[in-house]
Amino acid sequence: MVPQRRVRRLTLEAFWRAHLKGWRDSNLNQREYCELHGLPLKRFGNWRAEFKYE
Image 1 (cartoon, rainbow, N blue to C red):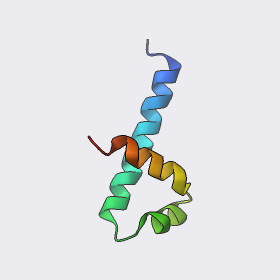
Image 2 (tube, rainbow, N blue to C red; image 1 turned 180 degrees about the vertical axis):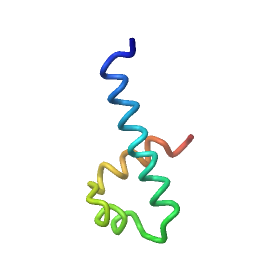
Image 3 (cartoon, rainbow, N blue to C red; image 1 turned 90 degrees about the vertical axis):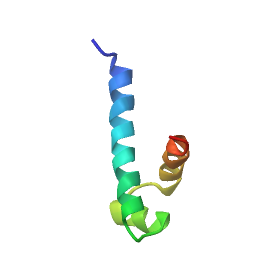
């Protein structure tokens, strides 16, 4: 059985990976993309930095 914390982490990663891909595929800057989708710009940047070297 997978611990609940691990499930939550994987769910968050999938959510932010999908948004980061959506942003890269768009012609919008980060601020515009976040405003359009109701995402916190700071958190978007934090997740972007987390996945930067993958």
